[in-house]
Image (cartoon, rainbow over all chains, first blue to last red; front, side, top):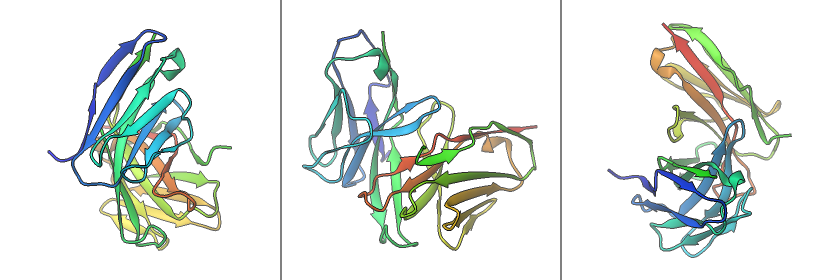
Length: 120
Length: 111
Protein backbone atom coordinates (compact mmCIF):
# COMPACT_ATOMS: atom_id res chain seq x y z
CA UNK A 1 0.00 0.00 0.00
CA UNK A 2 1.24 3.50 -0.81
CA UNK A 3 2.18 5.59 2.15
CA UNK A 4 4.89 6.38 4.67
CA UNK A 5 6.81 3.54 6.27
CA UNK A 6 8.70 3.98 9.52
CA UNK A 7 11.05 1.57 11.20
CA UNK A 8 11.36 0.43 13.89
CA UNK A 9 7.93 0.57 15.55
CA UNK A 10 9.34 0.20 19.05
CA UNK A 11 12.79 0.74 20.52
CA UNK A 12 14.35 0.84 23.96
CA UNK A 13 17.73 2.51 24.28
CA UNK A 14 20.11 3.06 27.13
CA UNK A 15 21.26 6.60 27.84
CA UNK A 16 24.15 7.47 25.56
CA UNK A 17 23.35 4.94 22.87
CA UNK A 18 22.78 6.03 19.29
CA UNK A 19 20.23 4.94 16.76
CA UNK A 20 18.67 5.94 13.44
CA UNK A 21 14.97 6.03 12.73
CA UNK A 22 14.19 5.25 9.12
CA UNK A 23 11.39 6.72 7.03
CA UNK A 24 10.43 6.12 3.42
CA UNK A 25 7.53 7.35 1.31
CA UNK A 26 6.37 6.11 -2.07
CA UNK A 27 4.00 8.94 -2.98
CA UNK A 28 6.61 11.05 -4.80
CA UNK A 29 6.19 13.85 -2.25
CA UNK A 30 8.82 16.56 -2.16
CA UNK A 31 8.60 17.48 1.52
CA UNK A 32 9.26 15.26 4.50
CA UNK A 33 9.19 15.87 8.24
CA UNK A 34 10.05 14.42 11.61
CA UNK A 35 7.80 15.20 14.57
CA UNK A 36 7.80 14.06 18.16
CA UNK A 37 4.65 13.74 20.23
CA UNK A 38 4.62 13.96 24.01
CA UNK A 39 1.59 13.92 26.33
CA UNK A 40 -0.02 17.35 26.53
CA UNK A 41 2.47 18.85 24.08
CA UNK A 42 1.03 17.98 20.71
CA UNK A 43 3.28 17.23 17.77
CA UNK A 44 6.46 19.28 17.65
CA UNK A 45 8.57 19.59 14.53
CA UNK A 46 12.13 18.34 14.90
CA UNK A 47 13.50 18.72 11.37
CA UNK A 48 12.05 18.98 7.93
CA UNK A 49 13.17 18.69 4.33
CA UNK A 50 11.29 20.88 1.90
CA UNK A 51 12.83 19.09 -1.04
CA UNK A 52 15.52 16.55 -1.86
CA UNK A 53 18.92 17.89 -0.87
CA UNK A 54 17.69 20.36 1.75
CA UNK A 55 17.06 20.04 5.47
CA UNK A 56 16.09 22.63 8.07
CA UNK A 57 15.64 22.76 11.81
CA UNK A 58 12.22 22.79 13.31
CA UNK A 59 11.07 23.70 16.79
CA UNK A 60 13.05 21.10 18.78
CA UNK A 61 16.16 20.04 16.82
CA UNK A 62 18.67 19.71 19.67
CA UNK A 63 20.03 16.20 20.07
CA UNK A 64 18.99 15.10 16.59
CA UNK A 65 20.42 14.99 13.09
CA UNK A 66 18.72 14.14 9.82
CA UNK A 67 19.63 12.95 6.37
CA UNK A 68 17.53 13.27 3.23
CA UNK A 69 19.06 10.31 1.47
CA UNK A 70 16.99 10.72 -1.69
CA UNK A 71 13.47 11.84 -2.55
CA UNK A 72 11.96 8.79 -0.84
CA UNK A 73 13.95 8.52 2.36
CA UNK A 74 14.43 10.81 5.35
CA UNK A 75 16.21 9.45 8.42
CA UNK A 76 16.45 10.80 11.96
CA UNK A 77 19.51 10.07 14.10
CA UNK A 78 19.95 10.29 17.83
CA UNK A 79 23.70 10.45 18.44
CA UNK A 80 23.59 10.11 22.23
CA UNK A 81 20.14 9.27 23.51
CA UNK A 82 18.82 10.94 26.64
CA UNK A 83 15.73 10.13 28.75
CA UNK A 84 14.20 13.44 27.59
CA UNK A 85 14.05 11.94 24.11
CA UNK A 86 11.58 9.30 25.22
CA UNK A 87 8.66 10.01 22.94
CA UNK A 88 6.62 8.87 19.98
CA UNK A 89 8.24 9.90 16.72
CA UNK A 90 6.27 10.43 13.54
CA UNK A 91 7.60 10.86 10.06
CA UNK A 92 5.39 12.58 7.49
CA UNK A 93 5.46 13.64 3.88
CA UNK A 94 3.39 16.23 2.13
CA UNK A 95 2.14 17.50 -1.16
CA UNK A 96 0.49 20.76 -1.92
CA UNK A 97 -2.61 21.09 -4.05
CA UNK A 98 -3.45 24.44 -5.52
CA UNK A 99 -1.80 27.37 -3.84
CA UNK A 100 -1.21 27.16 -0.11
CA UNK A 101 -1.68 30.88 0.13
CA UNK A 102 -5.28 30.82 -1.03
CA UNK A 103 -8.40 29.42 0.49
CA UNK A 104 -8.38 26.70 -2.13
CA UNK A 105 -4.87 25.61 -1.31
CA UNK A 106 -4.40 22.62 0.88
CA UNK A 107 -1.48 20.78 2.37
CA UNK A 108 -2.02 17.10 2.77
CA UNK A 109 0.25 15.35 5.23
CA UNK A 110 0.59 11.60 5.32
CA UNK A 111 2.07 10.20 8.50
CA UNK A 112 3.90 7.02 9.22
CA UNK A 113 2.58 4.79 11.99
CA UNK A 114 5.14 6.08 14.49
CA UNK A 115 8.10 4.84 16.49
CA UNK A 116 7.72 4.48 20.24
CA UNK A 117 11.13 5.19 21.73
CA UNK A 118 12.03 4.74 25.37
CA UNK A 119 15.41 5.87 26.69
CA UNK A 120 16.32 4.43 30.08
CA UNK B 1 1.58 31.22 24.89
CA UNK B 2 1.22 28.22 22.59
CA UNK B 3 0.81 28.98 18.89
CA UNK B 4 -2.25 26.75 18.71
CA UNK B 5 -4.39 26.15 21.80
CA UNK B 6 -7.14 23.63 22.36
CA UNK B 7 -9.21 22.48 25.31
CA UNK B 8 -7.81 19.01 26.05
CA UNK B 9 -11.21 17.68 27.18
CA UNK B 10 -12.29 14.97 27.34
CA UNK B 11 -15.68 15.75 25.94
CA UNK B 12 -17.94 12.86 26.98
CA UNK B 13 -21.15 12.80 24.93
CA UNK B 14 -23.89 10.26 24.17
CA UNK B 15 -24.40 8.82 20.71
CA UNK B 16 -26.42 11.16 18.55
CA UNK B 17 -25.29 14.29 20.33
CA UNK B 18 -23.88 17.37 18.67
CA UNK B 19 -20.49 18.47 19.94
CA UNK B 20 -18.29 21.44 19.07
CA UNK B 21 -14.61 22.11 19.59
CA UNK B 22 -12.84 25.42 19.34
CA UNK B 23 -9.20 26.17 18.76
CA UNK B 24 -7.35 29.49 18.91
CA UNK B 25 -4.17 30.42 17.08
CA UNK B 26 -1.76 33.22 17.86
CA UNK B 27 -0.25 34.08 14.47
CA UNK B 28 -2.68 36.43 12.73
CA UNK B 29 -0.83 35.89 9.44
CA UNK B 30 -1.61 32.16 9.38
CA UNK B 31 -3.07 31.07 6.08
CA UNK B 32 -4.08 27.43 6.12
CA UNK B 33 -6.09 25.58 8.72
CA UNK B 34 -6.97 21.96 9.23
CA UNK B 35 -8.52 19.44 11.56
CA UNK B 36 -6.75 16.11 11.96
CA UNK B 37 -8.04 13.07 13.77
CA UNK B 38 -5.82 10.83 15.87
CA UNK B 39 -6.94 7.50 17.26
CA UNK B 40 -5.27 6.11 20.35
CA UNK B 41 -1.65 5.21 19.68
CA UNK B 42 -2.07 5.78 15.95
CA UNK B 43 -0.84 8.39 13.51
CA UNK B 44 -2.81 11.61 12.82
CA UNK B 45 -4.96 11.64 9.71
CA UNK B 46 -6.44 14.60 7.88
CA UNK B 47 -10.12 15.04 8.70
CA UNK B 48 -10.78 18.23 6.78
CA UNK B 49 -9.35 21.52 5.68
CA UNK B 50 -10.91 24.72 7.00
CA UNK B 51 -11.73 27.40 4.47
CA UNK B 52 -12.59 31.03 5.09
CA UNK B 53 -16.15 30.47 3.90
CA UNK B 54 -16.58 27.45 6.15
CA UNK B 55 -17.02 23.94 4.86
CA UNK B 56 -19.02 20.84 5.55
CA UNK B 57 -18.29 17.17 5.04
CA UNK B 58 -21.20 14.97 6.00
CA UNK B 59 -21.70 15.29 9.76
CA UNK B 60 -18.65 17.51 10.17
CA UNK B 61 -18.63 21.30 9.79
CA UNK B 62 -15.55 23.49 10.10
CA UNK B 63 -15.57 27.25 10.54
CA UNK B 64 -12.82 29.86 10.55
CA UNK B 65 -13.07 33.22 12.31
CA UNK B 66 -10.02 35.26 11.30
CA UNK B 67 -11.01 38.33 13.30
CA UNK B 68 -11.04 36.35 16.54
CA UNK B 69 -8.38 33.89 15.39
CA UNK B 70 -10.26 30.73 16.12
CA UNK B 71 -11.32 27.62 14.29
CA UNK B 72 -14.22 25.40 15.18
CA UNK B 73 -15.29 21.85 14.42
CA UNK B 74 -18.89 20.75 14.81
CA UNK B 75 -19.82 17.09 14.81
CA UNK B 76 -23.50 16.25 14.44
CA UNK B 77 -25.16 12.93 15.28
CA UNK B 78 -22.06 11.60 17.04
CA UNK B 79 -21.13 7.97 16.47
CA UNK B 80 -19.14 5.67 18.72
CA UNK B 81 -16.51 5.63 15.98
CA UNK B 82 -16.01 9.38 16.36
CA UNK B 83 -14.20 8.76 19.65
CA UNK B 84 -10.70 10.05 19.06
CA UNK B 85 -8.47 13.06 19.63
CA UNK B 86 -9.04 15.97 17.28
CA UNK B 87 -6.00 18.07 16.43
CA UNK B 88 -6.27 21.67 15.31
CA UNK B 89 -3.52 22.46 12.79
CA UNK B 90 -2.30 25.75 11.37
CA UNK B 91 0.16 26.62 8.64
CA UNK B 92 2.14 29.83 9.30
CA UNK B 93 2.50 32.05 6.26
CA UNK B 94 6.26 32.34 6.68
CA UNK B 95 6.86 28.60 6.44
CA UNK B 96 7.02 26.39 3.45
CA UNK B 97 4.51 23.66 4.14
CA UNK B 98 5.26 23.36 7.85
CA UNK B 99 2.27 22.72 10.08
CA UNK B 100 1.80 23.70 13.72
CA UNK B 101 -0.26 21.21 15.71
CA UNK B 102 -2.41 21.85 18.73
CA UNK B 103 -2.20 19.31 21.52
CA UNK B 104 -5.65 17.99 20.71
CA UNK B 105 -9.15 17.67 22.15
CA UNK B 106 -10.24 14.23 23.23
CA UNK B 107 -13.77 13.10 22.38
CA UNK B 108 -15.48 10.11 23.99
CA UNK B 109 -18.83 9.06 22.54
CA UNK B 110 -20.75 6.70 24.83
CA UNK B 111 -23.59 4.33 23.89
